[in-house]
Amino acid sequence: MTGHVRRTLLLLVLTPLLYALVGASQAASAHTELVSASPKDGADLAKAPDHLTLTFDEPIDLADVRVLTMDGNRLPVSRTVGGDKDSVRVALAAPQGSELAVVWSVVDEEDGHASSGRLTFGVGAATAATTTGGDEAASPVPAPSPSVRKGLVAARWAGYLALALFVGGLAFVTLLWPRGAHEPRARALLVLAWTVGLLATVAALGLQGAYTALGGLRDALRPATYAEVLATEPGVVLASRGLLWVLGAVVLGALMQGGAGTSRSPGWRVGALAVTFGLLRTTGMAGHNSEGSEPTWGAIADFVHLLGASLWIGGLAMLTVAVLPRRRVGELAAVVPGYSRLAAVSVTGIVAAGLVLAWQVVGSYDALLHSSYGHLLLIKTAVLAAVLLAAYASRQWVRTRLDLAVLLRGDAATVRPFGYSVAVETGLVLVVLVVTSLLVTADPGR
Image (cartoon, rainbow, N blue to C red; front, side, top):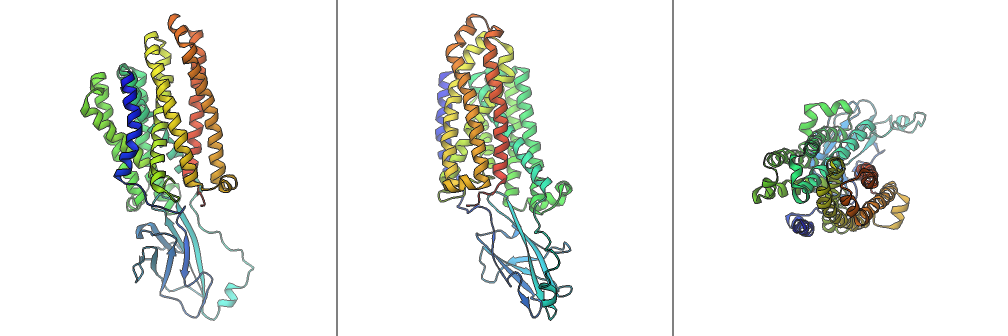
């Protein structure tokens, strides 16, 4: 068993290096924003222009840009004559009356966040009368629906939880508890994680489409929304994750049928590692890790962060749901010390990678203390500190009370404190995942 744990720790070190070789993300500067427009917003024009040029702060894909008239008609978007990748040319329709107004939105191709705004121009002799009256309040700038944003946060939370339970649960059963492949509770937990992971990915596809199109929850169910989002890079990443969850069903099914024998098979392990690598990779591509001056290190740190969290949380859930309720002395003596060592190394990786990510994304102490993203990060750190206190209590029980529990053959009074600390640790971890989902949706504002 010790050999299994050592090989897992070696994998924890070597996998990020493979990740870097496969390809790290390019640098980005927070979310994509509009830098300039020609004609300028609020300009007084003698006649209506036939096109509008929009320039953004980073290269964009045409599929990620939407420009609509105020009545909802989508305008054609193409590359500018010079072919600059950060600019687009918008063909304009003839204005109705003396004012021309359009709504633009752009999706950041790195993390799928949407930015939007409105441009208004006065046209003709009546410009002064219509643009300088000042009596009417300006209508609000269009933005993603709050209900869609909340749905997207919920889908990401479910996706993070499912990823941790599936990856960590598989690792726990494979390396520490081979008999768990035939234990009904362990099997149910793995099947639940797989089901939630697949459904959360499908839901995230529709919600991402509605979010980027500035639509409502109903738009998340439209087939056209799925077709549109699949033409964008975030949509391709989500679709790839969905296919990996499908492949995960093959890995999970083989484990349940073959049990410990299958988990030791080189072919199964290669398949499980490939699915695990893909799920972690596609999950990390939707975050902020590529932002900052060192995107490669940010991507590697994010991978270590996700892998460590999955090994810790998934194993913790498996221990709580499947191992402890059995109170079998042999299992406690064999499984708990191995998981304690694995969790300690995983937490070390999480903390170290988290520090790298915090500096990579936030960039300064001022941003940490005076931005909404920094505040969320501080909340996550505080909750994580509470989790680590509960984890420390669990580890102390393993060091000082496990032998007594074995002698007493799993006496309930002896095991109960360990169960309480593990339950508290599990509950707080769910809060950490909620804050993580909010962080992915928030703008670092570098």
